[in-house]
Length: 307
Image (cartoon, rainbow, N blue to C red; front, side, top):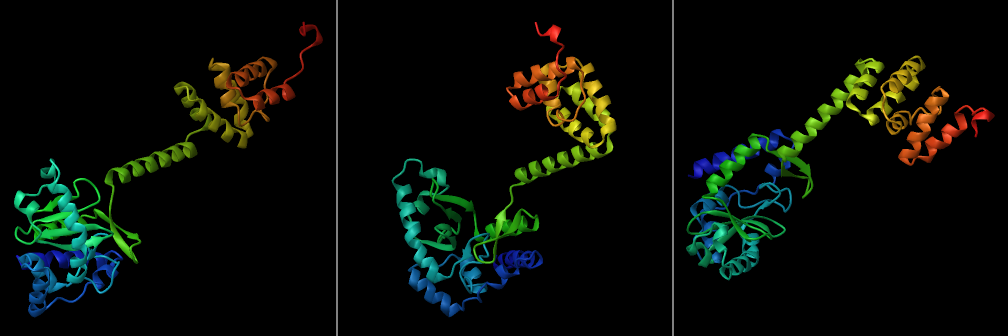
């Protein structure tokens, strides 16, 4: 069993060193001797679970706090583990008084027992192991405050090794120099999809003729996209007149037309009837700036049409 545990620890450390997180592996302390482990058991008052004994024989905690080996948690030595029992015992007491204690994954024997050893921790977020059953639990601020993590320490480390090798963790700054943060694959996939969509939209905008882009936006009834196309047309004036012609020929309502021309309303050339549609659209939008530009630029009506 200790060989499998040792191999899992080696794989984790190897990944850290290959992924700019060598400081986490280098922070591991030397192992405790058999004599030291016997003294540790005497301080706890019960035997250490064999797998934890094997782990502490490899690495008895860390050289310094922070730069933790267990994701963002430190690998604890027996001094820090004994201190953390003050967190574990109240959590167990709260579960003993609860009706839903079984949701924690604890057996009745484990729940009633005080023979626990914390081996990983960061700010009251602990990993603990039961001294007799050897099962691994998280001790958290959530409910239930104790939750089953793995059937054994070797399984926990083997799973952790498999996940780091699968790049399920990212190296982040903090908790010392760095720590391992569990990646949110769904969020990353969504962000990648958004980035691809933006890239494709930019490529389409670069490579597709402006009038084709405008007709596509008109067909979709996408006034905001039309506005973007007209903004591009204003940078190449030879496209502006045919774009205006296509917009008014589309039969779209004044509100749509005013939105589409919003970026270029000060430079576009329109007929009196077209200006009237833009003004109506501006009023429908509640956009006094568009209405003001129309009043400024539209040709004045002949005096005989004022009545």
